Image 1 (tube, protein in one colour):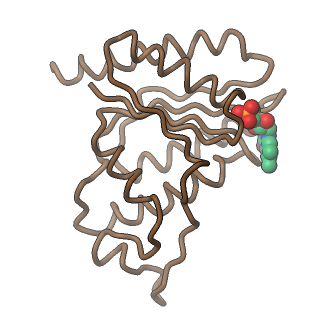
Image 2 (cartoon, helix red, strand yellow):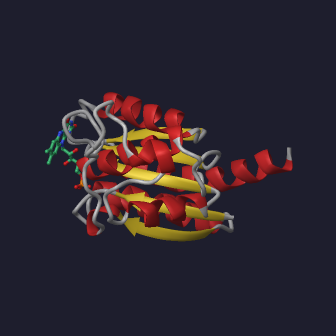
Length: 189
Ligand SMILES: Cc1cc2nc3c(=O)[nH]c(=O)nc-3n(C[C@H](O)[C@H](O)[C@H](O)COP(=O)(O)O)c2cc1C
């Protein structure tokens, strides 16, 4: 069982990263192999479609014209059984780097003869917000839409705020552990 943990905050000790690390520890406690990816350390540019109809190489070949780390991330997701995606909430949305990554990936996978595909990889989504958590729910809606377009089933999505930090860190560990067991149960039928 492989779980890819993706965290999207520039702050490696902040709320987003801490939630990711707790979920990762929970997944490891349940026996999963894990890998942590810092999205902000990668090159993930914004989508730039080149055709007049708004599509491009993504539709024809399931590949993006921009040569950066997208294909590497896509390959890592495809090679995992599930992902934990922990993003800070920015303006009630996912962080820009998450948007860049998933905007482009869904184009490639929606239209073209994609191989490898991320379809079917399970998701645990985490939205880390500021004090009051305004924008947390809309961030989850944005994530939910990406995963729906990519055919990635959602195990759970959580909002954490600075106020709920303490008890939500414990929840993230529990969620990571249960996530792995749940995928195993799904596989066993
Ligand atoms: C550009 C920007 C926009 C933000 N927008 C929101 C927001 O809409 N709602 C919210 O609750 N917090 C917002 N925040 C606060 C972050 O979500 C909060 O600081 C987050 O927990 C960062 O976590 P970190 O410690 O992992 O960096 C924003 C922060 C930044 C930098």
